[in-house]
Image (cartoon, rainbow, N blue to C red; front, side, top):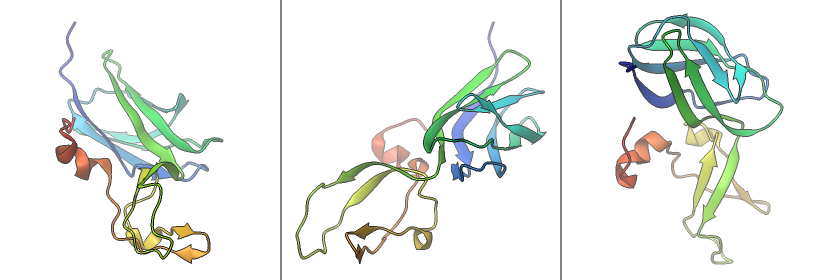
Length: 150
């Protein structure tokens, strides 16, 4: 049995507070009717859906960090978006992991849940604040990493 579904594996927004309840949007094509949307196994509350868009309020979570988002459709189709949503911020890696003691080095912090507005992100090394140059999400990096956007 084949299904004519195509899903973008990105959720908007891609992060939110552990308290849950805020709106998210999943976009795609040929989305089936009567969907069930799960964030790490917990059901979200669907507020509306169409063939191209699914809107829901994400559930609360006791754990922080990235979670898989799975959409189940009545026609049997399943869409899995690995690590597509993050409850709060989670740092995965900082590169380089050492620098000049006087500061001024450029570093990259990789992780989840940083948001999209650099003015709302704060980074400190000890008590010294760092200057945030930009915040990028995975969608902006896909081409440079040689990945398929879907």
